[in-house]
Length: 252
Image 1 (cartoon, rainbow, N blue to C red):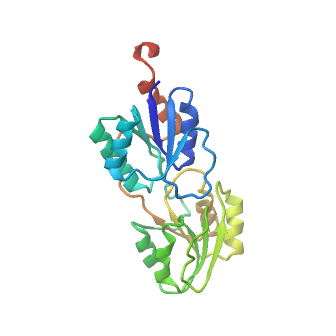
Image 2 (cartoon, rainbow, N blue to C red):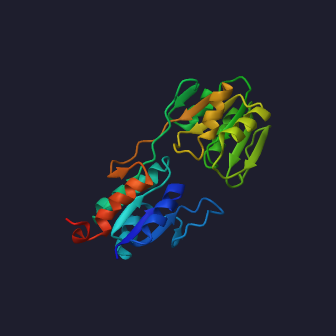
Image 3 (tube, one colour):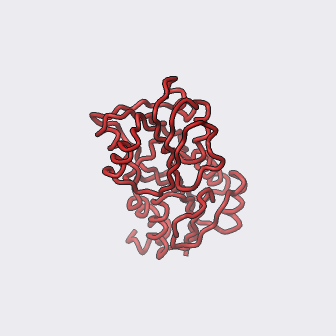
């Protein structure tokens, strides 16, 4: 049975692991940044590998037959390390590339390339800001301490932002549009800051902002390595079949 390493941390990675576990020996790798990750249903390793060379050594030591990059669309460094490790070792690599959101009529997006640019895009006038970015990025907003922040994350923000006015929400998606609309209304949010994560689980805030006429500062996705990829769990699972099933079993 071929051994597959999935670089995960996303809902799709967990779903993919569940689909593949009956076809191959699957290990799911998590970065270890979430304190209480959802149960994954397959063997899990947690923590970094030590860059591309460390990942390459792991692939070789564990006789990994297929590497799958199913990390978050903004995990650019991990994706780059995965692609390089695959080149070093010759291990085949596939990627799950969740499509990004596209603006539709009624959206009021301000698209920027970095979180730092998002901070600048808030402007000088104090506003009520909803930060839905993940706890690694929110510290940058200390540079714009004039705003009032509502910050949502899966794990607590520690240390808390050094700003005069910030409220914190601990919550894990999916988030429904009606709930998001109520949240934005009750907190009188004037602008939302978001990554273009794609998928349905966190789109509710984008749809809610559109319905309420609220601006969204959207941080564009980073460039990712070009490797064979699919947009959905089902499509990637079909690609994996060509690696785990002998040709005779596929009728080739």
